[in-house]
Amino acid sequence: MPRSAKPAEEQGGNRETGCRLYLVTPPALEPARFADILAAALDAGDVAAVQLRLKDLSDDALRRAIDVLRPVAQARDVAFLLNDRADLAKKTGCDGAHLGQTDGDHAAARKLLGPDMMLGITCHASRHLAMEAGELGADYVAFGAFFPTSTKTVEHHAEPEILAWWTEMFEVPSVAIGGINATNCAPLVQAGADFLAVVGAVWNHPDGPAAGVRAMNEAIAAAS
Ligand SMILES: Cc1ncc(COP(=O)(O)OP(=O)(O)O)c(N)n1
Ligand SMILES: Cc1nc(C(=O)O)sc1CCOP(=O)(O)O
Ligand SMILES: [Mg+2]
Image 1 (cartoon, rainbow, N blue to C red):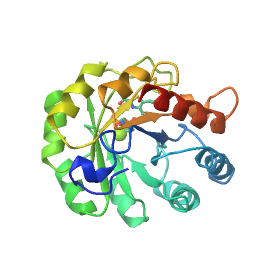
Image 2 (image 1 turned 180 degrees about the vertical axis):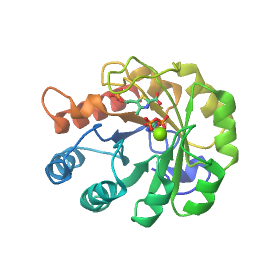
Image 3 (image 1 turned 90 degrees about the horizontal axis):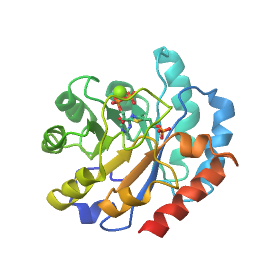
C-alpha cells in the first residue's frame, strides 16, 4: 500500500508488485476479540492494508478500537487506515484515512494528513471524481461497487472498464470494492486494479478469515 503520492512504479501497485488485498473490517466488532481474528487473517497471507470501518461509534469507542487493532496491523507492516475520519486518523497514529464523497473536505484532509499519511477517496463509478481525487493528491482512488454486496446498501455500480481506463491514463493506484470474492475477482485484477478491498469474502468465509485471505491471494495470483 503506497504511503505517499509517488509514481506508480515506486508505489507497489499492480504495475509493479501485482494486485494486493485490502481488508476492510466487519461493520461491528468487539476490539479485543477481533484483534486475534485480525492477527490470524494477516498471518495467513499477503495483505497490504486494513481499514477500520465502524459507524456510529463515539470518539472514545473508536479510539479504543484503534488502540487495540492498529498495533496488530502495523506490527506486521500492514498499513492501518481509518474510515471517514482524517482528524482521528491523524491523532491516533493511523497510516491514513479513507474518505467518501460526503466525508468532508478532501483537500483539507490531504493538508491535515500531510505527505506521510495516506488518503484514499471513494470515486464510485465516476471518471470525473477519480480525476478530481487524483489532482488533489489522493494516494488511491476507490471504484465500486463491482458486484452485489450485503455489507452495505450501494447506489453506484462500477464495471471493470473504469479500472482499465484509470490504469492506462494515471499512475495513482486504484482500489476495487463491492461484493468481490475469490470467484469473481479475476476481471478486476486483469483490468489493472492495484488493490481489491473486501469485507465479506474474508470475514464471512465459511472456513474462517485465514482461509478467506488464502483464497483471495490464490485467486489474485491465478488472475495475474
Ligand atoms: C477502499 C474503500 N472504498 C470505498 C469505500 C466506501 O467509502 P464511503 O463511500 O465513504 O462509504 P462508507 O465506507 O463510509 O460507508 C471504503 N470504505 N473503502
Ligand atoms: C464499504 C463498501 N463501499 C463500497 C462502495 O461501493 O463504495 S461497497 C462496500 C462494502 C464492501 O463489502 P463486501 O466486500 O462485503 O462487499
Ligand atoms: Mg465514508
